[in-house]
Image (cartoon, rainbow, N blue to C red; front, side):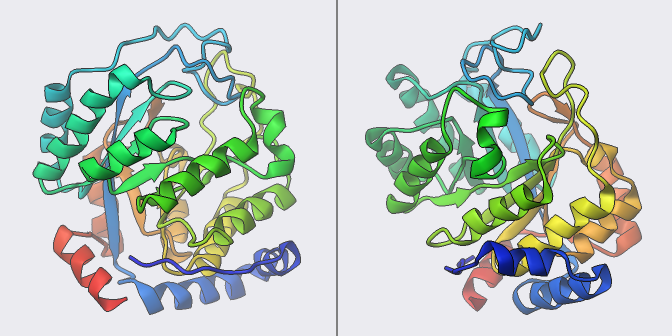
Length: 326
């Protein structure tokens, strides 16, 4: 899937976001149909390959060693275990396998195992994605040469609000890593989290940053905060469903050829809210009962919802056709 390069201003994006909801949804669905099959949704599986003990202080994360979490730190799991989980995900219909490690950045001693994971998952016929924190040039090249398809590195929120959520790294650090990844030829997966106390301006500014990347991320996960006990955001006020849908629709219009993924928070969404998100242009989800440490709907639940809506999971063949059409 090719992505476009845009030049969005905050004023233009805010005007779009604030349209009457029916007009916004109509525009988003129109754009969506120009680039995607409206009744197909891409499915990914996310596996935590190293849990807990992270040195970062992200206020939303139970894996931070700085948040007083009781979640125990684990070592990087064995390559064969990762490949076993990837095989099960593939057999369950997932086309992309995402691997996440809770650390600030990988150590060189971990790279051989990470490379083996990427190569093994690709050999299973799946797309590969990793989220490992910040990367140096050598690590990026090794992952690219192993065949990594996507690198996830969320910007989380706007540059203005970023320091209210994270202080152990900067917004610029995130952008630098994404630029390094893109320059190496790896696709970027980057989005954010809604419901962390940010303002509408911050949600729009986050989308402007993503849309104005050159090119925009191929995959844009939009998360609804799942408050984790013991974290600074444990008592955060939930985002209103319509406000969440607005961000999905705005993202679809601003990044017309990107996959927009409903990520964390789906376990708290009604069928009706998810249906509105699909109407607004969301066309990717995570499947499986957990997302790192957060709950996620079980696969049977998703199958029932898809049947109600007449939606089908995208296949690897569908993705090939989509790429050829661009």
